[in-house]
Image (cartoon, rainbow, N blue to C red; front, side, top):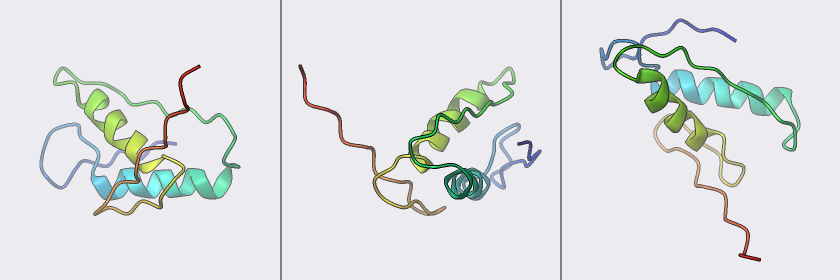
Length: 81
């Protein structure tokens, strides 16, 4: 999946919140919740891929639905063994 979308914020190389949320929704609609799905982000000298991947994970958490205005809540951590 390749979007080529630049964030409206004008930050070079960044994906917008709406684009990341849309891709997360497309993934959720395409694969079952227990499927392993991998997303790759092309990095630039400013580290945009790391920032975008971090935000993207917030949109892909399984607990609460996400929207461009509110990322999903993190999944609860399992109890320690």
